[in-house]
Amino acid sequence: MRNLLVILLLCSISANAQTKSITLEDIYKKGTFRGEFINARFDTTKKEVNWQWNRYKDQFGKKINRADQVITSAAKPQLHLVKSNIESIYRRSTKAVIHLLITTDRDTQLIRLKGTLAGGGEQEDPKFLHAEFSPTGEYISYVYQNNLYLYNIASGTYTAITKDGKWNEVINGNCDWVYEEEFEFTQAYAWNKEGTHLAYYRFDESGVKEFNMTMFDNSHNSDYRYKYPKAGDDNSVVEIHLYDVKNSKDVKADFETGDIYIPRIKWTEDNNTLVVFWMNRHQNHLKLLATDASTGKSRLLYEETNKYFVEINDDWWFLKDGKH
Image 1 (cartoon, rainbow, N blue to C red):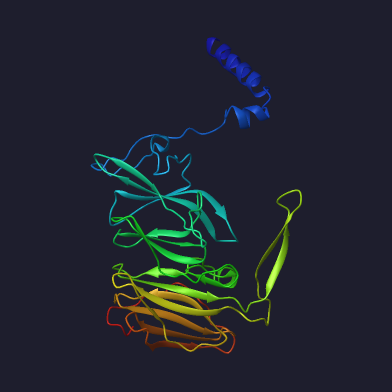
Image 2: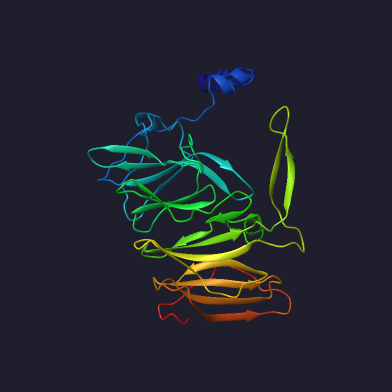
């Protein structure tokens, strides 16, 4: 009988709780249903990472209120790349404010990557694309205002690998709309295994026709124009460049140009060889070109043709012999 009374009492309490109304104030102001954030610190002995963002300020005296993504360097686990305020661009591409968090037994340092404007000066809270560590953890590579950059972590210096990037004209290290949509990737650069070279795409879209849309983002709207080729229109002219980080040397990959696509690039086990995937516009002829990172010269590694269509995939692996 006693157990029955307890059950009835609990049911009564539960029923009363369920009749309580949920208000907008509960959801947005009081944060009644908001999850708790776990605060902790980096422990180099146990290799555990937990964060107390409000404890640290960057060189501009600002804090990170929320980290959307944290990437730890495989080569140097005391280095963490923090992405915040992530903003979508198209279907797959995003940009974000980037901080470098350096954690040691004695100190923690937070550095926000700076963005230099084309006309000079610094952009406040700039957002970057495709930020990542080099394989050795010496650099952070990223794309900003259609140019590809390196940040030297030890010296705190910035290097502009490219300088000709311009909206609706030239893109370096990031895909144009066609490649993002049709070939399903956005980061248009790749490090080799040892971090000595970096291969990147250069899209010249100055000859591509524009498409404009009305953006209903304020009371007066705004006009958004970008390069959007339709069937039969000219596509971007694509180049592949190979950059020697130590010697600051840039060479262009040698391949047949024209109305073509380069749907993929992939480094081999040989630190000096990049495979360029060359394809005609009809997408029924594929050539894999082994390209020398020092000279840009290429040789045919593999070729495939089909009456209708050659499928592109990421299931390619290249052996150390440089032939297979």
